[in-house]
Length: 120
Image 1 (cartoon, rainbow, N blue to C red):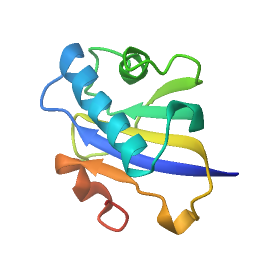
Image 2: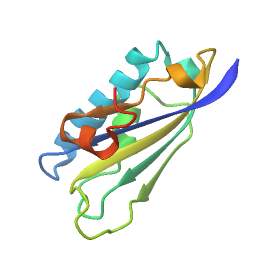
Image 3: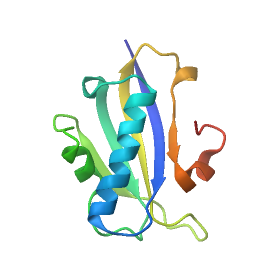
Image 4: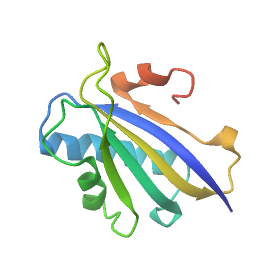
């Protein structure tokens, strides 16, 4: 079994904790489903949030999904002028037999514009 990395992002409509839970939950669920993964395949997840998000930690949404025994960490994304606002990004390390070229990176909604080269 190889260690692989999966990227993803989602843009929030507003900075509200319940909305963050919903959107980050959708992102994590899509990453698992599109890559045929279970929670047991997760090694760790890095979350970043743009500096305009203050309502909650994105990792809290993962815990609410039942991802409780996987190391999670949150960090703030760089504050770049003109960058898309209200974005949560993830970098998940997984165990998978899929070749790197078959990993499905997930960019939901408007966040698909961030990585048109890999968004699926």
